[in-house]
Image (cartoon, each protein chain N blue to C red):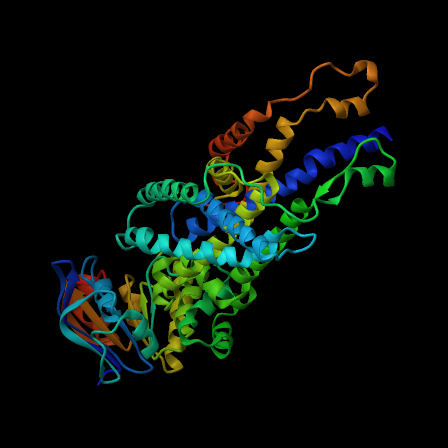
Amino acid sequence: MYLLSAQNITCGYNSIDIVFNCSIGVNKGEIASIVGPNGAGKSTVMKAIFGLLEIKEGKVLLDGEDITNLQPQERVLKGMGFVPQTNNIFPSLSVQENLEMGAFIENNDGKDMLDYIYGLFPILHDKRHQQAGELSGGQRQQVAVGRALMTNPKVLMLDEPSAGVSPIVMEGIFNKIQEIAKQGTAVLMVEQNAKQALEISDLGFVLNQGKNLFTNTGKSLLDNKEVRKSFLGG
Amino acid sequence: MDFLNGITLIANYILIPGLTYGSQLALGALGITMIYTVLRFSNFAHGELMSFGAMSSILLTWLFSDLGISAGILPTAIIILPIAIIITIVYCLIIDKFVFRFYRQQKSKSVITLIVSIGVMFFSGGLIRFIIGPGDKNFFDGERFILKAKTFKAFTGLNEGLAIKTTQGITIILTIILVALLFWFLNKTKTGKSMRAYSDNQDLALLSGINPERVVLITWIITGTLACVAGTLYGLDKSYKPFTYLHLVLPIFASAIVGGVGNPVGAIIGGFVIAFSELIITFAYKKIFFYLIPNEFTPNGLLQILSTDYKIAVSFVILVLVLLIKPTGIYKGKVI
């Protein structure tokens, strides 16, 4: 029984379906990665799970509750956090204001969470009064993740957290993701860097052409010959 | 002594009027900036919104004078200003409900909304002239001067006088109060921050649970307030004539662009840059030279670079230069 699961969902843009009968899930305190080639529908699945796209068939469950028809904002209140791949910060707001906006919906000042996030990303505390748009790519990504964490979500969804950052920065981000999962938050992410993502994942979903191709633990997927050959470059 | 006379002359004819006119432009440019950053279109109807605000103030001033209520040495317009602001805000909200909201829901391009705003401009202008007539209206009452030229001369013993009109004083003080309130609101309150967030990244603002309709409502409340105050102050200072507000749109837009589009600090700086440029270029310098250089060298002409009739051309030249050389404006803003 997953904490968050998408069961046999079919969805797409307008009348064109991109994802067919696809199932994804993540457990409490674990990391699940969705990997696959370009155009496999990875990001589409993420958007559908968060309610940014209409789901034609199938359902989404959070903690056993059917949330298929909820608006994204309502899902935030239910305990989901989402970090989009691009445009995921408010560039002219300061770092601290970015984080405060994350807690906007909860009608509190989110002081406890602020301390937790500054503990997790000390660099953000040093730069809390700087405009978020002036930060480096990796620091912006930390702001984006921090913003999504402000509501203390049960599930954190990340769309390509390592997009556009150097390998060293990517490693740092992955370390932080593991730390977040250790605190009990379920992390569901889409990753282009399949190998590194599967290495830290408890569960991996390999998608191809909008369908589930393999679903297994991260380690067994890494060991799987076919997956290695087709998606991990040998 | 001659040197001091020259300084007084500059203060009287450039510094004080420049600060006043600059404040009025700054308030107008702030209104345009608010609409541009949050609703994402250039609101050409802003001049008429200012006119509408001034008209409301005039009608209320007349009503209050009939009732025998006045503000003593201050103009009556000051006490009725809050009511006039509310009327202007209501007008903005009506226009938004019946016109702009439709284009917002259609997700129209900003150019289309800009043209719509020109329609709103002509409609509002017509409505205003229909209500109050096209003629000149002077609604200033109370004490005319804070500092009279005669008093200044007697006090300092200089040849040149320095006069500060009540309207000039009120304009500068009200502008400072309003700008301080606006910046406090945008930077310190949760609602203000959510407005800046919405203008930064609409999609992410929606994800964060910021209600767009509420942001739009507050934007119009701020815009209506700024427009009403700016319009009333301009009308008090220079007497009210509906057509002048049509021309006022141009220097206001120039201010917003020169300062850096979408940047509130830039809008204020831009307002003063435009105001002082217009005054400095159209001022007749003969008298200053009369004080500063020996009399036999004083030229015969007025020493005016441009006639005051070309005032508006000055703001246009600055606008074109800024767009050619530094399109982001003085403070880094968005490029249109």
